[in-house]
Length: 83
Image (cartoon, rainbow, N blue to C red; front, side, top):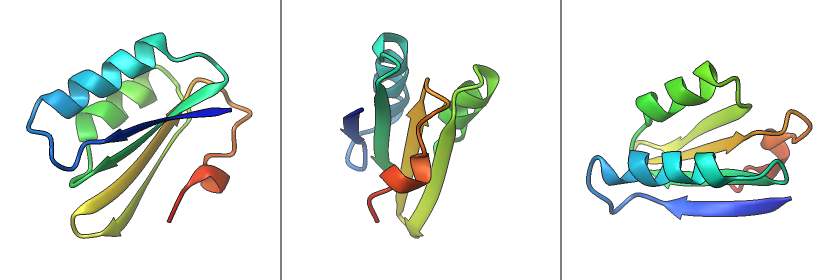
């Protein structure tokens, strides 16, 4: 499995969502998106839920969120969380 890292903490809206959606479109089943953001990206999580992509989000602290999204139901996203 291959991690696609997107550190969006310093990016302005709507760039993080656009980049994440681009990655989700081109991502294969052996890859997963690992996004670090300064807030919970609700629109992105809604897209993942709508498409039934496995996803996980974790608030490390008030301004650091970890978001993992995959197209593969066999990935254990909790094991892939880097915190």
